[in-house]
Image (cartoon, rainbow, N blue to C red; front, side, top):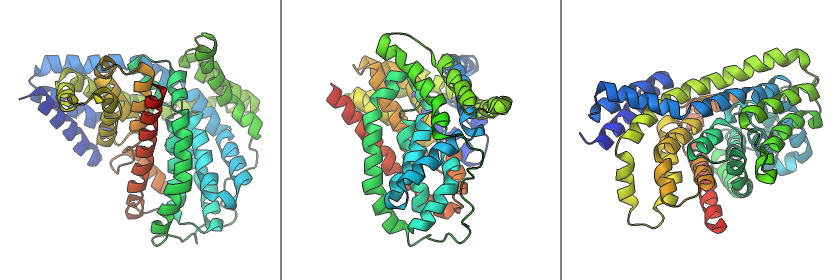
Length: 422
């Protein structure tokens, strides 16, 4: 059997298992083994390719685990809630779409997972949505859209893994997508959300379960300045490399930012709890990455990439298209931004780089592509975000076309930014 077909069947097996509620790690592990055997690699080579795939992403896993210090400090100290509350109060009902999307974007941009950002902002978002009279579905879509915009410029696992696999500096990968993120936010707020609300209003405008006191509790929250100090420290440390040539690895910069956040929030007694929370969040991602690394090893060893290269060989834009397209397809397969960016960058990095695309832009476009279909129902984000807004599965499904439109907009803007940059 052609190895591309074998690897594809293995990937499909992983998807089916994940949809059937099998642990994503075990689903991908089973898919990797099946894909290797169906590709004719034999059991010994199959295991070898899987191990090689995991070894290739080990440095990124270490950086992701260290990022848990920053994530934990933002959530446990109340810094994330403080940041979102301050922005929503400032913008209010008059700019309701921006007031909902911007806090989620900023939280993701400074290192909070998109699902955690949505859950954090949702309580006060429900209050604001009720006052502004928009659909509850639109309210959640605004949070998700803002989160996607922030995710392509964040030190989150998807960005770290894409930068690592392409051999690009993390701050540079974050930086080149800033224009796409800002433009994407404006398009989301000014075009997609108003259009979506016209359609979604007929399905759910009910906020009867939301009381005036059900918003995010501000008691004991740190000030906005104290809350933003930690992530700003991490970003400034990462920025030393492109600005002054001083290399501060994310393995150091992200934990330092987290510790600064704990100090400025005067939450020393919560240090242990912050570290535990952050490690728990990142451990799940690390385990998922081991599974994605295993299946990425099989895909890399197969001739799947050669088939795609042949399909795109008639176009001068082959390398340009391959970076985001591979990420779109792989994020759809795993319903995960991180898994999509991992499999795509691990499997197609050599080919994309050989086509003449720079490592920084290849990683940036791959990262953007991972936001197009990462919200499908066989992933955890679909259910976590729907639960945060109190939506049924049927209601949550109605958001998928609009979420995909936001992700596709970000991807196209990233590609256009690359073309303009030359």
